[in-house]
Length: 162
Ligand code: FES
Ligand code: FES
Image: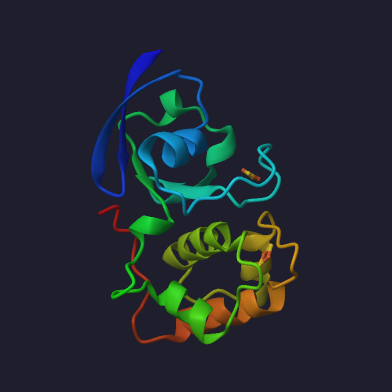
């Protein structure tokens, strides 16, 4: 066990955990943020995607010791029910989710894409999103929602990490 300092959504946490514990476990089971989902546990599906210093990572295969003192943002950190991120609003407007299980990871990857490329092409979207699997096959609506978010007047902003 070791004391690991994590900053998640702008809030500092001091965790007494195994340094090899996957970040996903720490986020969900220790910190208690349940929006990030476990899918495969092998970096194959994207459902556990969070941002590390603004870039998408697979939290299921990232040891907590590797992200100590770095800025982690989860789905809970990009918007609130009363102040949705433009990507979240576009997801609602396009009725993207089906079962919803993969969607937290999809949104986190989409937000990172739009932060780095505010007007992505279909090819850009497909390249960025290819590692996020959806068993319900919502890919066409995801692509539409990303275009919608890109076109929205509220330009997507960098992850706040608030
Ligand atoms: S649970 Fe992490 S990539 Fe599938
Ligand atoms: S909405 Fe069901 S897995 Fe993607």
